Structures are given as C-alpha cells and as structure tokens.
Length: 225
Length: 225
DNA sequence: CTCCCGTGTATCCTATAGGATTATTCTTGA
DNA sequence: TCAAGAATAATCCTATAGGATACACGGGAG
Image 1 (cartoon, rainbow over the protein chains, first blue to last red):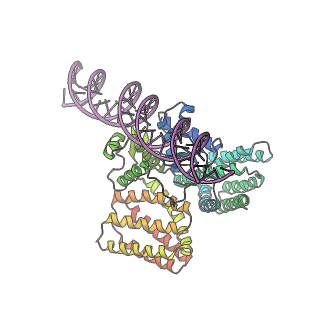
Image 2 (cartoon, helix red, strand yellow):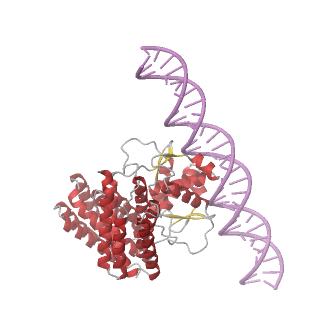
Image 3 (cartoon, rainbow over the protein chains, first blue to last red):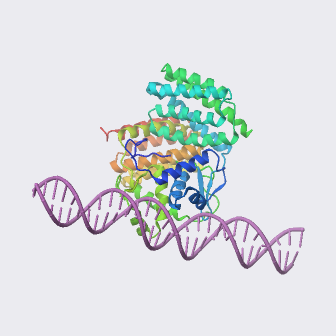
C-alpha cells in the first residue's frame, strides 16, 4: 500500500516524466492483462531489451511491484509473477473488503459530489450493456473496478481508498484467471447501491454495499468448491 | 502494503540472505529512530559508501520504501524521507485504525493461542514498568507497537495484519516526532483489553480496543490544536 | 535402464564510467 | 548593500562490463 504522506494522491504540478513510472505501468498492465501468467518468471534482461531501457528502471519498477505483492523475488533466481490466490487468502481478502467497502459507501453517501455521481451512473449503464453480452468480460471487470474505486474515493479517506485499490488489483487478477461471467446479478446490486447514494441514505448505502460484497463472495467462492 | 501472495508471511525454508533486504532494514531502522529526519534528503551515493555496497541494492530498498510511503522520490532530485503527517491524514489514519483494530481484537479473542497470550502479558508488564519512568519513551513506543501487532497477528487475517503493520509504522514516526509521554493511561486500557481476551469475550475485547484507539486519538489530537 | 555427475548456457548481482540536471557559490554591476 | 548571472560542484540517471550462481543437458558408471 502506498501511504504517500508527502505527495498528494494526484500531483497538481507538472512532474517530469520518470522512466521508472513508465516501466512500472507497462509491467503492471502486462500483469493485469495476463500477458504475464501467474507464477511465470520475469527476466530483467528480456524486459530491458524489449522496452529499450536499461536494467535499473526495470529493477525499480519490479521492487515496487514486489512491495505491492504482485511479483515475488527469489535471491539469485529472479522475479516471478505472484501465484494465484488460495482459499485462505481469498477469505481474508473478502473479510477485509466487507469491513472497508460498506463503511466507504456509508461515508460516500454524504460526501459524494454530483459530478462523481454522474460518473457512477455512466459506469453502471455501461456495465448493464455488458450484461447483454455486447461487451467482453474483461471490460466489465475493468468498469466494475472503476465503480468500486470511485466510491472508495468519494469516501474522502485516501488511506481507505489506497488500501482498497490494492485489494481490487488482486481481485482483478483472480477474476481474470477464473474468467467469471455472471455479471447480470451484480448490475441489480449496483442499481440498489446507486439509489441509496442518490437518496443520501447512509444506512441503506452501507447495507447495499454489504450485500453486494457478500453476494460477490458467494459467486466466486464456488471456484474453490 | 505487502500482500505477498506467493511467499507465506514467514518463510519456513532457508532463504539465502538478500543484500537488498539488509539494506532495507538498515534504512528502515534509521527512519524509525529518526536518524534520518522527516523531509530530509537521502543521498544514494552516501548510503552506498557508508554501507559498503553498490547503488543497485540501495535503489531497490528505496523503491520498496517508496511504495510503502516512507520515502518519496522526485525526478532528477532524488529520494527524501516523507514529511510529517498533517491533520487530515492523521484523522484518516485513525478512522482506518478504528475500523480494523476492534475487529482484529474481536477475532483474536477466540483465536489467540496461550503462547501468544503469554507474550501479550509480558509486553503489558514491561510497559507498566516504563510507566514508572524506568524505561525511555522510545522503548514504550516499541513495546506498544509489538502489543498491537501481536493482536493483529492473532486475528488470523494476514491481510489485516499487514495493513495495520503499515499504519503503525507511520504512527510510530508520528509519536516519535511529537515525543508523547503520557503512557500511564494507556496501560490501564491495555489491562482491560487483556482481561477481555483472557475471558475470550469477543464483544468486550472489541469494545476495549475501540475505547483504547479513541482515547489514543484524543491524546495525540492535541498536537494539532 | 536408472542414477549420478560434469559441462555449458542463461540469468542475476555488483561495480564502474559517462551524460544530464539541479543546487550552490562566487563574481560583477547597479 | 543587494541583485542577477555564470561557473563549479554534487547528485542522480543510464548504460555497459565482469563475476557468481542456478538450471538444463548429456555422458558415463552401476
């Protein structure tokens, strides 16, 4: 998790482009799109050649990803993508989500701006379309991630927002691996949550998010059978 | 936050010593002991010379610390220790603590082992001695950190444990900076918590932790006045 | 046929050198 | 005396080379 005490969540002033950040985003995207499969090794030399940069920025990016838990490093062997989640960690992740997300929804009910709310509606609309099979599942997963991220952001607590962002990163990889499809039920839950937020009803928003996360747990839990 | 999907929280098998880890721990200790003051710059060259290693492991360690939020990096300027917390972030941190720690105490009430419980008593005893002024405050802060960390560990949820560990890292720096002293009241709160845990009373443990964190907030909140 | 062991290749880890940028200091002029 | 500009020094960033280690393959002995 990046607590980042010094630099505000988003940088208002111009920041000279850091080569390391670019590399970080590239590797991050390759992990998220499963171009790099879980558990497979990641060669520093190859990455350096492919991206046309030196080894140093690669190492920095991989170190940051290691602190984030997305890659692991073994001495004298190298980096490799983190392996898939097991049941224990899956349960722990949902336990934490169930603690943070309903709380974030509650706070968002009173703090969300009209602009953020409009974005929320738009995301829900796009996801509804994807429920009709017109959008690929990876798009749905991306939209769903933005949906939850926006609510966490609207909670006003940056720490909670950053913590949840990390959790959802691992959620995304988990979903992609099992290519879950049933998205139609999630849409109705999102609708209920949006209604509660529109009414500025904190209790209802918290409860709606709780139900949504619990249902999500039930849906994915079957993968472990 | 290190989610570390692949390597279990503690490594059972022998791991060849990584030079980067050693450097990481050294810099981490220097930050925690305020040998490196908040906001001050951190020279890579100097560190490399002082520690007798190359620049590469220094960079890796600093990148990990950056992901953790303890240092910040500015392009073409270098690394510097994170600046002191402001009021907004302080409130956010306690809001998150108040969400996680009582929950962890509740779970720990049913899951804590007798061995862990003994360690808890020992820590509380040492802190009580420090309340009589026989131990320095930095020692008290360290013991208190171990106390809370152990409860988070006993909760059985590694993710919550790791998240709280990061939060307490920043708490430690905050306390050290303001060199808070009043520790006597905290000891009675710890005693109440231990009693609840001993009785395996989940409700009481959760409530005791909640009160403890809230009181802690009140104590430190005066620094912003 | 199986197991053990030596060699070769690939990769990581470290160290050093060169280019680029910023901060500091000194000089000069008003 | 103060301000502005230039030169120097320090630092970071990148690139490349050399040493060390682990993994893979193939040959030989039992």
